[in-house]
Length: 198
Image 1 (cartoon, helix red, strand yellow):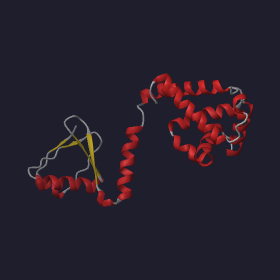
Image 2: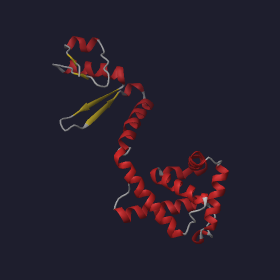
Image 3: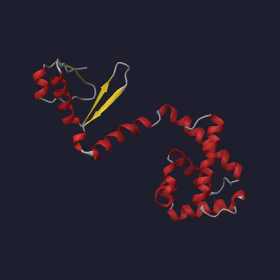
Image 4: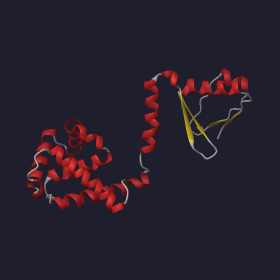
């Protein structure tokens, strides 16, 4: 750990860059010095994180750089906060897959069909990000294409075949409607079995 000692005059005139394992201590005796110090950090980094006595970090973002910059920095911080901890990820994934398997078994999908495996994968991705359902051809099918090494047309053809072979969904023809229905049933299954959505 490196401790930087500085006086008020140095804070205002120079900017100090730190590596990730270093700490910077700034001592400011009046409001003007505090503002100069924060302004210097904002000019260098565009954002400053201030920790309170409870350990919560409050971010101050330089709005002078424009709305798009501010929105990008907010998204950057929010998305990292939304990501689950790596230790919990496997457990949560197992819960979601178990719910998907239960729903698919209830509807009578055949496990041997590649369309069933694709559907299982797509339902998991939809559970994690329901907005993908708004444009299945542009957003959802390419995910399956990368996972199963198929073209979007092959993905849709395999899905349709698996749905056609499913006894409870023979009258349904639109893949999007079936995905929406199975997604809703998966959400209900997770909530009823585990009491909360993961």
